[in-house]
Image (cartoon, rainbow, N blue to C red; front, side, top):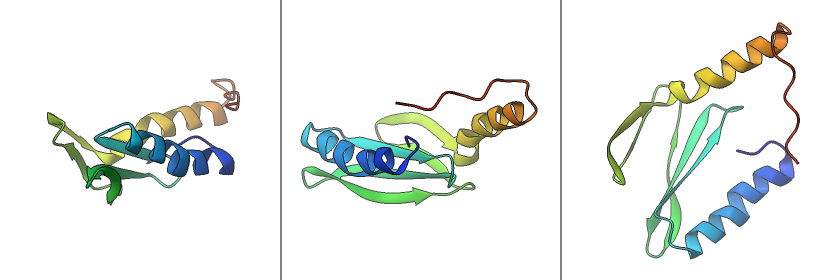
Length: 97
């Protein structure tokens, strides 16, 4: 999810509406802050929230039959980057515009 209240609203409302109208079959919203993955799937011509996955859950998709991933794996990268920034081993990332 894009950081900031305006961007979060855009991801959950405007993008969801656009993707739904364009026939997207599945949309995932990954929140590294909350460590959740919201899964939206096409039902009756629009994307509907079908699951909010937490750290110990497993993400699968009918669109990718061989794909399976523990949700906590999504967040290992963000944790490592945050630690490196805190220890001044990486510069603080620039905010998205």
